[in-house]
Amino acid sequence: PLLSLIFLIFSTTSILGFSASNSRWRLVTLILQAANLCYCVSTCMPNMVRMLWASMVGGYAVSFYLQYIDVAILGGCDFEARGPVRRDLSGLVGREGLKEKEKKKQAVNLRGVRTDVRDNRNQSNLITRLNFGWNGMTNWRHVGTPHSVKNIPPFSSSNAACTPSRGQFLLRTLSIFAISYLILDILAFSSDQDITIRFFSIDKIPIFRRDGDPVTLEELFIRSFATISLGIGMNAVQRGTYSIVAFLSVASGLSEPISWPPFYGSYSDIYSIRNLWGVFWHQTNTHRVSALSHFSVHDTLRLPRGNMIVRYLRALTTLYISGVQHLIIDLSAGVGVKESGAIQFVGIVIEDTVIAIWK
Image (tube, rainbow, N blue to C red; front, top):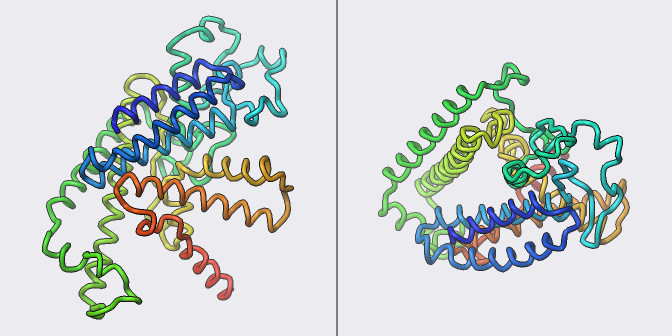
């Protein structure tokens, strides 16, 4: 599965950097990588053994695949245009390339770095094209572009415009990685097999529909603490992984510090379910699931914009796509469809209903 993930990243990066937006190779790669993704997900658990590592590999595989659909297929990102050219699967839509006058100007690439497109040496440079492809496949929040997602946290809460120097950034990301590793080590050391058997067996999963022994206060406390610990562990894994990739990208010169803002928001924003997922959480899935939702509702079904029913349908489609993505991640960790619960979003609906009634 690791080799499948590496192959997926390398091939999609290369295709994005070296092919035109309407190239057939993009669709060929889409089909080939779909098969590769299926193989990767099906072999994660048997080869990785631990659910955490299996879900990580499967998660990054499906994330990079969806990112490829977003930037290479739906967005049609093109090296010559230094950005997206909107298209559908049959060819270019709307904008059919840069005008001659625009070509003489400086363009903005996927990372927001200004690049003079008149420099023919840059256009034919292997490293430049690979850099373009790498930035397109790793810039999941579209930082520094007109299409950046909402709620990207700043480097400094007191000064949103502040950007650390290269040295400061490398030291900061390395420190975050070390702290994240330490947290995971502590969580692993504090695990207790007896508590796991006693409180987390399959028959203990139901709360309201349980047969046999009733739920105790001790069990509720243990399970609540375990849920918090799981969230902390997930936070540490994702933040640590992001930090080491950011460190290597900036250290190698592929990216600038401004391209790698903090992965998570402030803990003070976690006062509701919507804020947890919409403000504090990493937002790396936001652009691609929204793009797929818009494509499904407006381009495929041809439903008009501005209609309230269509707006809610698009929101429902977004949640469904995100749920399917996380279902695939669960499958890679050996969790079945019935046991997953990834497509359940009742919590936000209940919360919004309570808030609406309260107001």
